[in-house]
Amino acid sequence: MQSVFDQAWAAFNGNHDALPLGGETISVHRAGSGRPLLCVHGWAMGGLSFAPKLALVDHGFEIIAPDLPGFGDSAVSRAAPTIESMVGLIQDLILAFDLVDVTLIGWSMGASVAWHAAAATPSRLRALVSIDMSPRVAPEDGWSFPLSSGMTRETIELAVQAMRNDWSGYCDLFLDRILAEPNEEVRMALAALAAQADPDTASRAWLSLMQFDARAELAKTLIPALAIQGGRSALYPQTV
Image 1 (tube, rainbow, N blue to C red):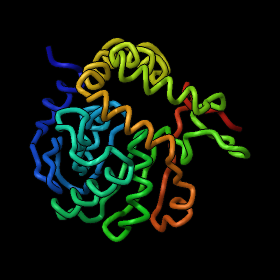
Image 2 (image 1 turned 90 degrees about the vertical axis):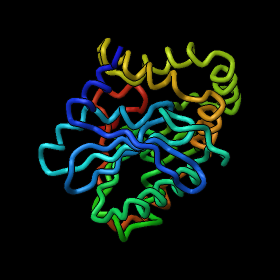
Image 3 (image 1 turned 90 degrees about the horizontal axis):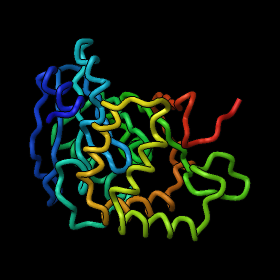
């Protein structure tokens, strides 16, 4: 049975192609034509998760949404699944498609990739959009915006063990936190994407996120940038 995401991409005549890139083969989902919106998905997800943005196709945009290695339909990478390696892949994709005037959109983990890519490759970018992400996920003295103020080295290690021992069970808990209100169709679509993820890749990418810090890169960003946080986010603390 097709998920609500699959149905949306089909309704907009989306293409799903395998692209050789940097010694890897990744799946890239594309729909529409016009100004490119390059969309980088969140942790444990895939490019199909940008289905809710497909209405932009009718406003002169092309949606380009890759599956990062080890997620969605893309095979596990031979390289370590780090934020840095994902940045390199996004840079290679921009060059492979000869994209210019790109609006780079990142959701959650994808925002961390987008922030680094924007600092490293500004010449081909028009704008940067981040969705529900902190530039520093792990807690730190004096830092008010971690994923959880109660996170410690021990809880991080326990989370990684849980991912590797019971990926399905861990995803159930994770999905409960990323939806502000119950929506069974969307939850099922997200669960289907999470089920495709390689647990080892996901756990190693999570560890990379715990070391990630984009505060310096954000200060160097020279293109227009928009940061979006869900008003009822269950992941990050609310501020006035």
